[in-house]
Figure (spheres, rainbow, N blue to C red):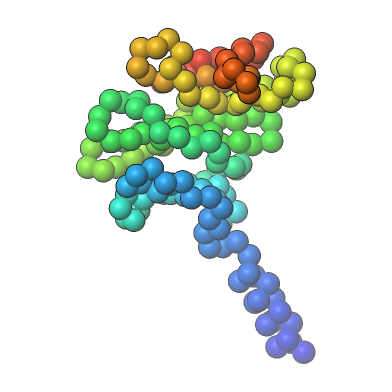
Length: 164
């Protein structure tokens, strides 16, 4: 009987999320960015030509909205994303450095626009990239509504532009 209980307990413990649980894979030319969970934390991994160059297993929430954006104007892509939690979301980037290295940079916490702003039934984009000033570089817009027909950006009382 003790053996059966031990085996049951062992199977239960080994089936938990102790290994990587990859949910979504994004592809950007030679780069793959994977998000998911590891050891009960949020996971983000960056691969270049299938070689792991950045990994972070930490944080509480879900990584979302992954896109590339030139932040430091070098020859390597930078990646912009949010870490969504229950009450707010945080904007982060993976910033390219020398020798194919990346560092995770935290920018700012924001409240959810569709919960805390008076927007009615419109769907708020927590983060949206667009070259608003038409100078050739995309701005990071926070908590805006994008009109489905015209593509026009509608600002809410919680809208903001993030300076990187």
